[in-house]
Image 1 (cartoon, helix red, strand yellow):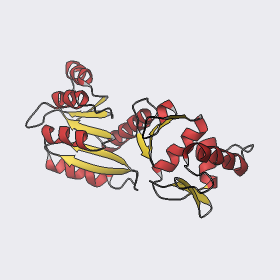
Image 2 (image 1 turned 90 degrees about the vertical axis):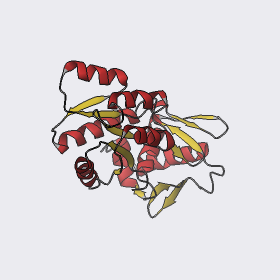
Image 3 (image 1 turned 120 degrees about the vertical axis):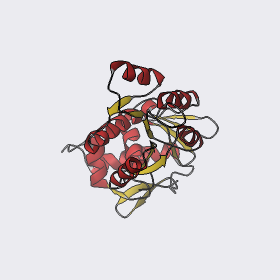
Image 4 (image 1 turned 135 degrees about the vertical axis):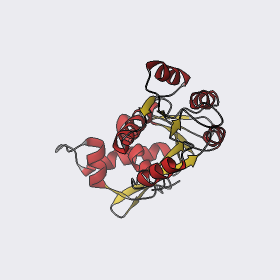
Length: 228
């Protein structure tokens, strides 16, 4: 999936890294990257887009909480879940104050970690910190905003934001009209494809250089998709 969530797993336990990677790879919505030490994890989140980081506390080169503190200082705004063998309140407080969002205590069930990952991604995607790239625009769904290359700002409605978010997550795949209607409006008998087409038309008026010839939000095969 081209626009899959990009996860970073940082743990010096190679077996745990490989196991988590193997299990997360079974979920189509994720692309997984791994690091064995804090310094490389800090470098990766600074150099490329990482949507969520899973960080071990006991890393060989640097305490995981200090690594998170440095990641935050460097501008990383994605969720961070700490893995720890310590279950004390003081340990959790220190990690949260360093900038972590959550703690999972070892040993843990994969289903618990997966649920936490998905919950934090959903929450982050709705926050002011979430940022995605759509064509020449920076998409900020939490602010319902598209920012152009020269800083121009396009305000979006709630439905326009939901349409772009869902199409973005689909990557280059075509999303048919019925799916988009169900995802954005729910199963509402009063909503028709005409409602969707009206919103698509208005979106194109906002984002397309030439709305009559769509180059970003295109129609294909009975549905819609976004082009980079």
